[in-house]
Image 1 (cartoon, helix red, strand yellow):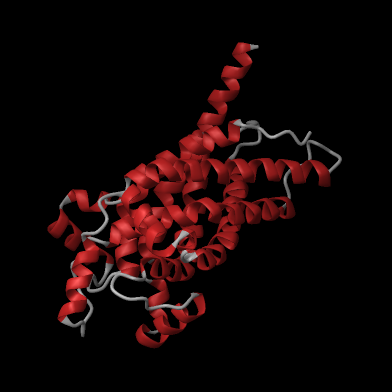
Image 2 (cartoon, rainbow, N blue to C red):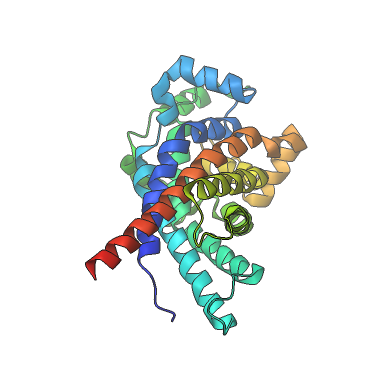
Length: 308
């Protein structure tokens, strides 16, 4: 009882890699819609990226999240699964007792808090790389500002160089720009991620089966992802804007200032930019993540049993 199970971390790593491969193109579209200018609606944004940057434009900044988000998800799934198991075992004397809402909520919130430690820098670098190719300039910029912005757009040669530039210019704290908004997004966001997945998966599992089928896992994971990412959009917009801030000057002083300026300049609808992309992207990403996670856990368990 209470022993950490490494299998959850390994399976989470594989699930994270699968989710990045499936979801990164739409993640690029989401970032451009939320922090870019002149893209209009989702369809127009996709067309502009394709026309200006070809298919490769949708995969900008993918190498870093592919390597790092796999580790990020390894930690998130490992922390969540082990925390949920630990809480459940200490709250219930009956070890066969089904997981209740309190267990799932506490484990999800802990996973959300821990996720920011790794996910903050990952998201920051990813968004910097995604945004530096943006060609539309803000209205009213002087020639010097436009020149500076163009220079910024061509500054980062890759993720390692991006990290080096941030550390040199802003120090270690610069790697956690937008962390406050990320906490406000991820702590409730993971509750609306793991809890629906758990209950939908149980509901889809037939009574005579001990474990859910691959289809049940895929469907439950996809639905949970769409719900979680859709509801997280307002704070996701704030986080993205804070992390993309500084293209040519520092615009926002913090979360509250970003919300205030965004609302005053663009109205309430600005906080729902990328909502459609988030919801659509959330389904295949999370479906791939949970399916890979559960299948990996099953394979690891089978291997252990065969080795014994």
